[in-house]
Amino acid sequence: MCSGIQMNIILYTQSNNQVAVLMPCTTELTLVEIGIKDVPRSIPFWIIDESELPSTPQESWILENMGEPDGIGIK
Image (cartoon, rainbow, N blue to C red; front, side, top):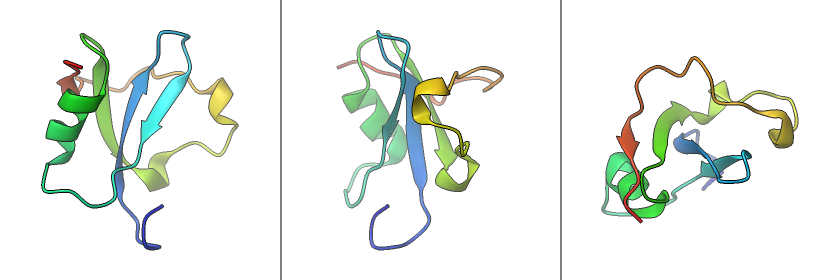
């Protein structure tokens, strides 16, 4: 978490099926622009409030029932 404030984060599934979390701190880019830039090519990503993250270990997370992705990576 950056500066102790609640924020939105980017989630996507990596090639090893683990969920990745991008937590941008300060930038002139929007979250969608960051996701498009930093998420691997052709991988969908979702932007959520970090308070929505499950309390279970990240290794057990599965992205399902997320609705339409907020973008697709081009990295």
